[in-house]
Image (cartoon, rainbow, N blue to C red; front, side, top):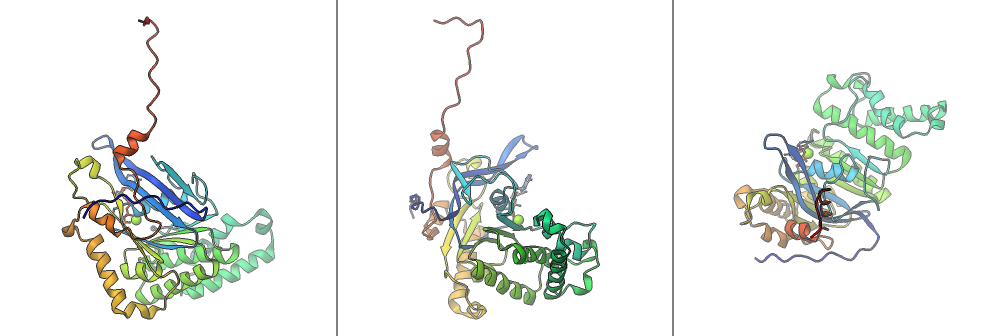
Length: 336
Ligand SMILES: Nc1ncnc2c1ncn2[C@@H]1O[C@H](COP(=O)(O)OP(=O)(O)OP(=O)(O)O)[C@@H](O)[C@H]1O
Ligand SMILES: [Mg+2]
């Protein structure tokens, strides 16, 4: 199959995220160079989409989310906008549930749940006893919903992984309840440590919130069934390359699949249908199995979402950058 670069879709002004030719990596002291993690990411996510982001461990999903939330600044990009601007620090418009839970170890479960509110509330609210009463009532409701009531006075170190995860989720949900949903919410394996039944409850919970507020969600998960069930779109990020390019250019991940799904939430019964199972299997086989290292060009055939596109290669991008200014001649050099 031939590699056919896809033209950029028309810009409508309704984009929550718009990246073009984005590269990001980390300095590797062992060989003193930057190791590319994200290699040429081209992505448009419209406002209101629920995007499931999947990919093998270490491919750069959390890194990509950190670029969206402003926890890290993209190293190189032709275009990079989140909610209409370059994200340079985390703020209220972009909510996040972290992969590593992000709990304060010295605070009890209840205080941790209220912590999100303390960060977001205004000075006036913080000094209002009635506001605090309301916040505490709400915290109690979430402790109950998350089956954490018995643990409200425990510290994070005394909790299991799944319990810690539920505290982190409650922290985010209570903030959404009181302040509304942020325009973009990034969830990084937020349900990874939950048991199956709590997980399904919370899948329905986030879908209800999404349907109510119609905001953009980017949801990283290792569970393909969850990805296909929740998303209006599934994106696979992967570092599996087998092109003939030199090794250094094959480093890092790209979007290799971008599949549109139902634009609305589905009932959990859909998980039992053959079509659902076949789609999950297809994504697993094409996107994850290293034995099936298809040429990256073939993967591009799967960028079926109308907002998926592939633009310049790194060489084309580098060549398109303005040349660095010429060095000034040494002071004693003479013209001619
Ligand atoms: N701050 C950092 N400094 C150096 N390397 C990093 C840093 N953060 C991430 N990396 C590296 O970047 C790569 C991508 O990491 P990232 O956490 O984004 O992967 P991931 O897809 O989220 O993986 P997982 O599914 O296991 O969470 C990994 O090789 C990781 O070791
Ligand atoms: Mg991660």
